[in-house]
Length: 500
Ligand code: NAP
Ligand code: MG
Image (cartoon, rainbow, N blue to C red):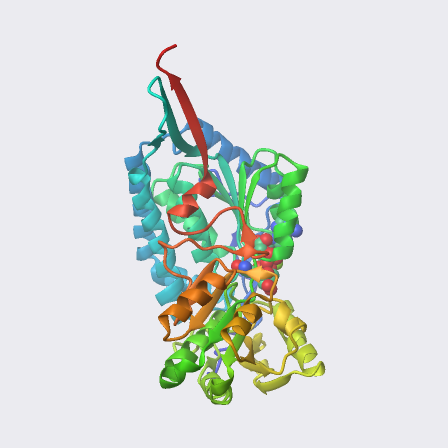
């Protein structure tokens, strides 16, 4: 690991502007809300303040969303109109790319370079891609007997709540609002408490793009207050959630205890990376991908390739080279172009990651490299890239989502063993398989129980490919791809009797 010097910003006096919920097309007044400080994870200073939405604010946002939906300003707008407004939103996001990248880097501690070159361009692409679907979706006619016509059409579901995590705040938002808005719904977004500013700014840009008032509302605040109020709200038709498995369960309970709203869950993961022995010739390229899978976005990634399995003949060389590669990952100020690992999102996450590594070490695992908090003098929550060996199959480090730059490496002998190790998890979000053997690549990909399997790379696909989990990584609908539209639509059959 190398480090960059962090520019510790001078401790700021609390800034004057207090960000507020965005309801019915404008920033709300400050009501009797609790004010939450937004802390810069790179130096622990307060850089913004946000009026947290309470239950009343959530109710007003849902009312505005429902009014807009019923008025039909968006839900019944001509496809060409929806198409153009969403394209204009993508254009405005592009014009503000640098601003959005800096905002996201600041509030989430993500390396600015990856926000600028990855997350924000991906979010723009998602909005543009779904804009293009608006006027290219056709209904179906069923193969009925001659005396009748069966029309199969889709309709927007109504008012959708999108509850978002902090790790990819703007890209996840775009994956949700792109298809939700394209299909004519009204949306209420609850961003994570650590990262509300991106969603609030995009709501302003959406209004500027011509999205009618009330169609896109944002209620920043706490999960157990604003998130819960959305989950239990009787007038929300569907929830789309990305975050922890634990909170995903809560949303199922909320639905059961209220109006049986539809719930789509994108949850945690503990994704395997299987490296077969035939990679000897191209080991550098494989190791680069494995490191990206484990360390990029500080490992705060639901698809993080945290469990690495390497076929025995390659194991020792692989470990040695992975340790060398991890030393090349620069930890430091997210605003620096040299930084690949910024701070973890907050102190709680740092403590959580430290604890996992400590427990692993205390229960027999070997910390081959990393394992410590670094740059403590900056007051940021930095943790170095970490490689762990000899972890027991049932240990927490092999079973639970750590959400830090930490991977375990374990040897295997046969293909069958690799498959069984890969599937030995409650999760099923993603996996990578590295082999030059085409038949083995197909066999193993088919045998892995996960929503996305990438071959010879670490990837979540692109905007055209659906994304979501098997097992406890989620269910109910997919993000991305044409498949995502189903999350936000009801299917209607209209049966016409031609002989009546
Ligand atoms: P989280 O607690 O599941 O939060 C996700 C969203 O749900 C946030 O907006 C959160 O609000 C809200 N929420 C929290 N508790 C809630 C409740 N009781 N009722 C309704 N909404 C609630 O996830 P997190 O805080 O972002 O991260 C915690 C862990 O989740 C991570 O360490 C990681 O293991 C996992 N995670 C997984 C993914 C993924 O994509 N699979 C993404 C992020 C995190 P608050 O901001 O107030 O908490
Ligand atoms: Mg949380």
